[in-house]
Image 1 (cartoon, rainbow, N blue to C red):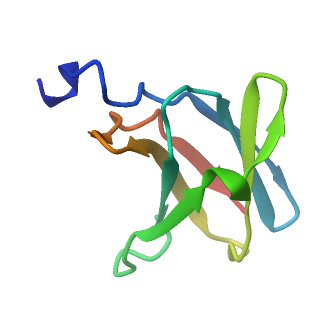
Image 2: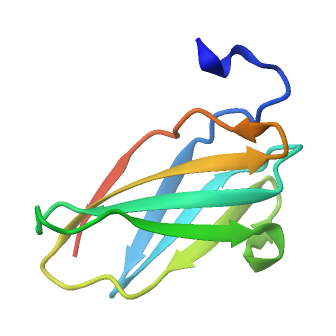
Length: 103
């Protein structure tokens, strides 16, 4: 199992709130993570590529024990599947849980 390395970031547990055309993603704060990567799949458009957002820690909103990030530019009447990874100098976390949202 490639995820057994203790130096890799732990798996993120994500949840979110949809408000108008923006989706606010929340996840547990984890030590030893330098960057985050969000994968957004447009399930309404089979030919679309995965949209990848790379986020530095300073782009996050932080609230107590959670981080959050606002995903914009989502299209109405589309269904999206979102998951997330934490990254550090040793590599990438296992993929988070998956959230499906419909606008």
